[in-house]
Structures are given as C-alpha cells and as structure tokens.
Length: 485
Image 1 (cartoon, one colour):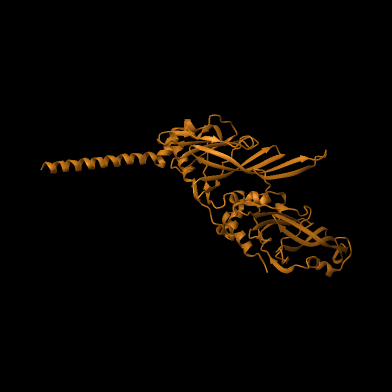
Image 2 (cartoon, rainbow, N blue to C red):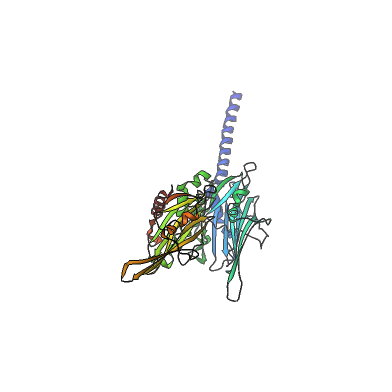
C-alpha cells in the first residue's frame, strides 16, 4: 500500500513537473515569436530612432532577419546630399529577447567609407552551399556635381552582430571641358576592386560571375517612411504603439528571401515582356514626356541581333520632313534589368522604321543581321530626299548606314504628278533606279537575304491612359508579330 501511494505521489509530481515544463516552454515561445519581437522593437524606439534628423532628408526603416538567426533586426537608413551619401544603422533583438543590440558596422574605406544604398525594394543574396554564409549585393551611387558620377557594386555580410561592407567593382563617368567654347569629353572607367578592366556587360553580370556555384536568392524589403507625411518633426516612432506595430508588421511581411527564378524562367519571352513592362521608365515614360508626343507614337518588341534578349522600340514620325524619332531599350544579360540603348543614328533624320516588313541580310558566318530601311526627308510638297541603307543593332547600340539617295523634285509645284527623280551613291555619282533599289543587296552580297516582319502597336498619348495589363497585351502582341524568315 505504501509502495502504491508513493507511486501515485510520484505520478502526480511527474505530471506537475511536465505541466511546468510545458508552461516554461510556452513562455519562451511567446517571447521569441514574431509578434513579441516586434513589440520589443516598438517599445524601444529610443534605441533605434535617429537623433539627427534634418528637414528634406528621407529616412526609412525596415524589419528583416538578414543573418537568419530568428532574431529580428530593425534597420534605419537615410540617403542625403547631392552625392547620394547613405548612412545606415542596424539593431537586433538580443538573445534574452528583452531589448535591442546595436550592430557593429564596418564600412569600406576604399573611397570615403563607402556604404551601400540599401533603400531598395530588391537585392540579391548568394549563399555558399557548403558553409551557408550569406552575401548580399547592393549598389552605392556617388556624385560630384554634374561632372562626375560613380556606381559601386557592394557586398554586405551580416553575422555575429556585425555588418561588413566590401566594394567589388565600380563604373565611374567623368566629364571634362576640352576648350573655351565649353565643349566637353566624357570618359568611362570600369574596373574591379583590384584594378582589372571590365566591359559594361561584365560589370552588369559581375555578382553572378563572382558567386558562380552559389545558391542565388531574391531579397525583398518593405521600407517605411520614418517621417509622417514627409515631416521631420512628426515621426512614426512617436505614433501610438498599436499604429507603430502595424507599420513594423507590414514591413516584416514584405521581407522575403526566396530562390531566384532559373535562367530558363527568366529568359522566357513572357518573363522578358513582363520585365519590359515593369521598366517602362526606360523606354516609354521618357518617350511620352518629349515634345513630339503630339504625333502618334508606336511601340515594337523584337530581337534584331538574335541574342535571345528582347528589344523594345518606341518611335514616332511627324512633320513635313517625315521626321522619325525613336528610343531603344534592351533586356540585359541577367534577364532582370532593362537599359536604354545607344542611338547613333542621325538626330535630324532617322530611318523610317515604323514599317510592317523589311529585308534582312544575315552573315552566315557571324549571324550578324542588317535590316534595309529608307529615310525620307521632305522639305516641302515639291521636294523630297530618300536615303536607302541598312540598320545594324549590336551591343545595345543602333546605327544606320546610308548607301544611296533619291532626290525627287516636282517640275510644276501645282502638279505633283510630274516629278524628276535623280539617283546617286554616297560619292554623288549618278546611278540608275535599279542600282538604287539593289544598293543594300549589292553592298551585302555575301549575306543571305531574308524578310523581317514587325508588328508596331499604337500607344496612348499618356502613361496614365494605360494599365500594366494593357501594356503587357500590347507588348505581347507586338512580339508575336516579329519574325525573320
């Protein structure tokens, strides 16, 4: 009986001990939950809110877990001055889950303590599959007036309550006057940290090449404004706790680290068209903002250089001179960015590219492609000049080479049906109409002749008149109509 009583007592004590252990575990879980940590951040604003806040400077804050230790960080950052000078602070919930600890920040002294411009909605994270180390890549922009600008590629690591920044490569552009008339020359310098020269394409893909073999992830941030309604004297940190918690939670929900899309996914036509639509500021917004947008504008999606990266062209033709103007942009090799192309065509008179089709000559050895177009310039109803030549697009640069011209003059301005046509080559030698029509084919006699078709789509007069869905439809239809056969 005594043995049985002792056994019962022991069972009761075991149950009580188990319940106590469960309660203790529940308390720890509650203290370490996301909501509990956000509350710690909200209740310790005196630790992480900036002290020196100036009117006109934009302060932001965001919630993240960059070192993946399940303890949240709150990041404050500001980008100030004409030099785009960034300053960031990192604070983390400490291991007791009761307060915040400020991280040590080791900046790069390569050039005046470089700090990345981390106020970005997206970044890249490369993870070493063997050590699980994380490397985050951001950019840092520096300017010195209008004559100098530099873009740095930065790598940031977060571990052991320390953020370390390292510059990987840079692209600087300088402008210097060359004479008293104010003419200037632009020089570009693209190098790695060690001084090795890079091409523009290598600079664009530098992180991917540097971390080849690492797991690649996309990082998203949701930055919140520290100043309410843009006022430096009304701060989010002074809001009632429930309102601040709402902002903190919203920011945390916007923080994600997810596997980057595969190369096949990124390089698909659908993905590229979506990227073009997301980056319409490169080719559409700036185009419609120009004065000539009173004329009808058109857009065309194609792959003129056959490099599997799409180009988008916005163009318009207007005026009695049949004046064509265009802006070109192309998906970059990372399939995640779009940059405007260099237009080396004559600013006064570009070829009339808004056509349904054109002859395409392909070099069978190099696959280089040349497209036949005509540039028509009409000074008045009784005079016009048509220049035939070929358009060549490569390395994000478009050129047009004129080969021969046709001058048309009306003998009687009141009767435009009677005209005199004169044909001449580039050396002003008179040629026949047949020689004029075949001048491109003769010049590119070693190339194979094909036909390129285009599907130009009319654009609205303002970006306010088009939704993303409509823009995607327009771009998709245009690309589906492009072919070289």
